[in-house]
Image 1 (cartoon, helix red, strand yellow):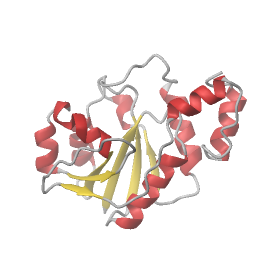
Image 2 (cartoon, rainbow, N blue to C red):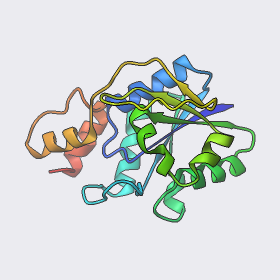
Image 3 (cartoon, helix red, strand yellow):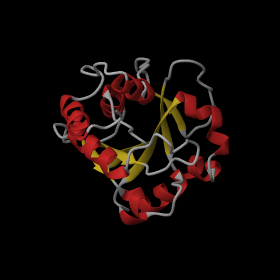
Length: 188
């Protein structure tokens, strides 16, 4: 089985993430997309990060109706901060029957060379890239495949700020995620 690994803080998961996951599965040879909830991205601040179990639960709620999607907490049990190469290696050893592809945004190519063992990632894994608003670095490499998809300019930061300001995120997140945020009083 071919599995796309979509890493993220998902703080919170939003409609943009779901659209990207669906497009990647639909327009590529992927059988499934696994949403890997990262406890701590080494390149991001953790000051506004919800507890990983809340973020995982929101992912589970958002993808519950799509049997091609799976929520994964694999990085919860690994050393922190989480490095993509370590997770890819672990999953490849645990699930040798699967062929893993990495799903990233075009903006991540701007600093991909700074990722731990980026050359090893390119050597052993194909990367599916979706465009992001702004500058998307074009990195020529046989392992990198750009996927035609719409530009989605929704950010978790915007969603968190909107919630803090008492605004509506009704069409920005899945309804069950919105209910979870409201019921647990998250981001207020």
